[in-house]
Length: 412
Image 1 (cartoon, rainbow, N blue to C red):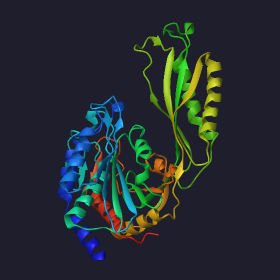
Image 2 (image 1 turned 135 degrees about the vertical axis):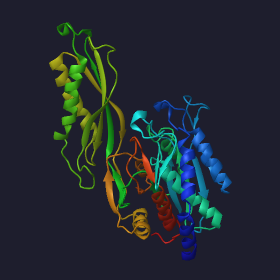
Image 3 (image 1 turned 90 degrees about the vertical axis):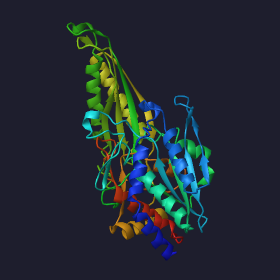
Image 4 (image 1 turned 180 degrees about the vertical axis):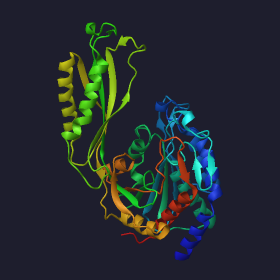
């Protein structure tokens, strides 16, 4: 098995041009979900399925979620499996959708066309989450090319809709294909990490999104006393929500920052002209809660503050729960974490440590189903930014980390 591992590691190390080619093809697909004004992930998933088939993989499963908003009416979820000497499976999860590029002027080049500068590739999606997708694909290719049977079976999951809620992606898969996954398997989500490869995410804060709707009375801005300014009341309510950290000061050193956060974020358009006092105002608050903070307590406190602000401004304020994903954790001494620690040390020469994040990944959904998942990759952390970038060498080394785990069958 050690000889097979050496051959696999050597083969992966030589795939830099393959990484560039795959990243270029995947980026060009513009896999925006309908919530982000795009056609979905079908073209990108077809490319992945075709590439896997060309490599000789025949065990391909589709679990497509109905969605009438996209051409063809389906959001594709693809699973590829390779047998191993052990009945247990190493599962790797990558999402095919991306976020919009934002202001084109903020990019140094076309976000949908990969630009290469030495070891770095630039383009929308190259890091989030195509670095993972490409690591998975080149690993499968090398296993097939070398005709190796790994110690563990390998499962590759290419899912839709991660960027806008997972309803048509991981949530759908766990409803339709839950029987494929066993608590005895190893689950790795390469969707967060650090530039040094030393961070293994084992816990996530609760994600609570609040929608705040302020209703007042519209009037001409030259006579503001004739109306009730919903924007003004909303601004005070936004500050009141931001100050909720004073009510929920609990800390947890596993996370950075080590506390709950309450961030007013998205703001919907209110009036079309400067000289109109808005009678309606809608904004959102992104709350990331450390374990132990009850999201229902946060919602109750927000509504209490809404009543106080509404009374002062003679408006009405409704606070609704837009989304709530509970906090989740995998034990730091679980087999998948120990396997990652050993493999990262072997490939990157660093000691990786368990930690928590405020962001949300599909690992939380797996954990809620009793499947102990860890999140790890070596990334630049430029997700969702202009000039998003990904390292070719890190992509291949990540694949080597997965190879180390895959070729060992003694994970307790």
